[in-house]
Structures are given as C-alpha cells and as structure tokens.
Amino acid sequence: MSAHSKGIIISLRSEKAELTNDLEKVKLALENTIAKKGHLNKELLEERKKVDQLLAKVKNGNYDPSEITKYKIESKNLELRIGYLMNEIERYKKRIDSTENELIASNTELKNIKKTNEDLNTNNLNLNKKLQLVDEKLSKASKLSFSNLEMNTFRIKSSGEITQTDKANKTNLIKISFLISENELVTPQNKTFYFQLFDPNNDLITYNETTTTGERIEDYTAISVVHYQNKALKIEKIIPLKNLTPGVYQLKVYDAANLILSNSFEMN
Image 1 (cartoon, rainbow, N blue to C red):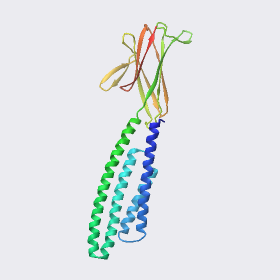
Image 2 (cartoon, rainbow, N blue to C red):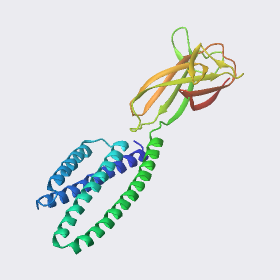
Image 3 (cartoon, rainbow, N blue to C red):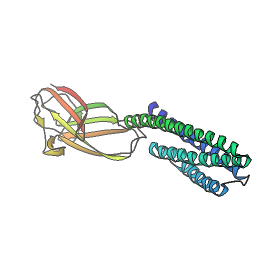
Image 4 (cartoon, rainbow, N blue to C red):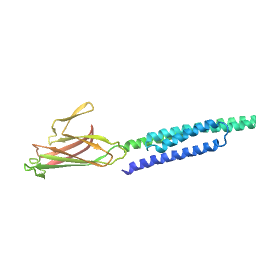
C-alpha cells in the first residue's frame, strides 16, 4: 500500500474513533440525568436507546467515508435533540422555584438553544468541507497507476527454439509487459487492456481486433483481460508478428478508452 493510501485509512480510522468517543460521552451524560428520575425521563430513555444503536453501527461499520459521514450527521442530530431535552429539564426546575426565575431561565434557554443551533450549523458546515476534501483525496487515491512498459522481440524457429532478436526480417513475436501498482482503495475488478502497435510508416498492425470506445470503433493489435485484486500485478501479452520492416515502432496501451502507457523501439 502506498504511503498516501495508508494516510487516508489512518485519517478515517481516527475520525471513527473520535465519533465513538463523542457518543460515549453523550451516553454517560444521559445516564447521569436518567439516574435522577426527573422530568422527561421517558424521553431521555428513548434517546439513550438511539445512542446505543448508533454506537453499535459505528463500532461494527467499515472505514467507509460515506458511512462515517452518515454516522456523524446522525450523531449531531442526536446531540441536538438530547441537548434540547436537557435544556427543557433545566427550565422545568427553574420554573418550580419562581415565576421570575422561570422567565430568566426561559430567556437564557432560548439563547442557549440559538447558540447551540448556530454552533451545530457551523460544525456541520466545517464537517461537510472536511468530508469533501476526504472524498477528493479518496477519489485520487482510488485510481490505478501503471508503469514499467517493456517490449522484447523474438524469433521462433521451426524447431520451437525461441531467441531474442532486433532484426526485423527475423522477428515473428513480440512480448509486452507492464505493472499495475498495489492499491487497497480500488475495488477488485476485471480490467480490459488494448494494445496498438504501429509500424515505421505509422500504420497499425492489426489482426481484426476491434472494440467500441465511446461512440467510436477503434482497431487494436491485441486485447488482454485480467482480474485485478488490489495487489501489484504484472501484465504480459505475447503477440505474433510477420513481415516486419526496419525502423521505429510505436506501442500504445489503453485502459478502456484511456491511454495509460506508450513507448517505442527500433528494429534493424
């Protein structure tokens, strides 16, 4: 795994741990208030049940950015509802003392609720910006990288013996290879690669291999299908050739319609 990918996973793990810790604190505050068996106790018990359910989902969930985002929003909504109930309890206590205290408490409570809502809105805005950055980083990190494109030409004799050569009139086979890097953030999938080999006259060497890319049908020298499973993978393709002429040959490799690698080699 690349250092960049590890950094993203560590960051998501830290966010999950922070969210779990915040929910545990909310649960503890609820239990302390419920133990007093006061006003709105039934409602507080219901909110504690919701906190327990969310805690279980967070602890058993994957390090998936979309799931963590959903859990954070649920947590904020729970905190808002619980905060409102706590404030209602406090206001109820003050109302018992005196009408004057009730009015003072009501005004203070309204300000607190307004301030809480403002803080929550600010936190949600900051959270959305942070999650957007995480999504952008994940999108970049979830792309495959390709490297080490190599081409070697050979002659297969009638005896079956294979010898490497750079002579055009002797070459009847080319071996192409390249690497796909390891990336645990990429979903395992089938990959189709297309090879275009151009001769010194810039004519495509083709054996009637075709595919549709977008709205265009392209001719290819060869096609290779592999199954990528997050691990580093070496791709090798052997293509038979005939009637080659001396000069510079150009090779292009496509992932679907996207050009990923290109190189050239000279035949004597």
